[in-house]
Amino acid sequence: MDRITVEQRAIMKKTSSDRLRARLEQAEWSAADITALNREQLMATVAELYVAPDISEAMASVDMPSAESVKAKEVVLR
Image (cartoon, rainbow, N blue to C red):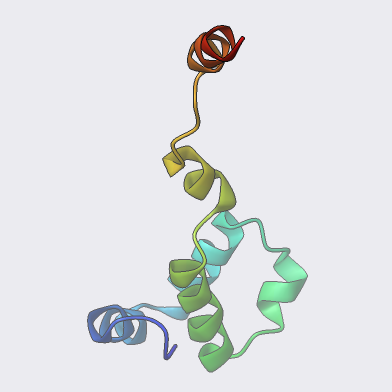
C-alpha cells in the first residue's frame, strides 16, 4: 500500500471488505484465493491493482505504427 497515493489509501481503508473482494473477483481472482486473505491482505492486494495496470490498457496506450505507415516507409526506403 506504500505505492498508492494518500487519497487512494484513505479510500481503501473506508472501503468494505466485501467491496474489496468484489474488486478482486472483477480482476479474475479465484474465490478460494480471495477467501484466504485477511483485511490487510485484501487492501494490499487491491492496492497492487491500482499500481499494476492491466496489460491490455498499457498496450492500448502505446503508439504503434499503422500498417499503412509501415508500407509507406518501406516504399521510401526502396
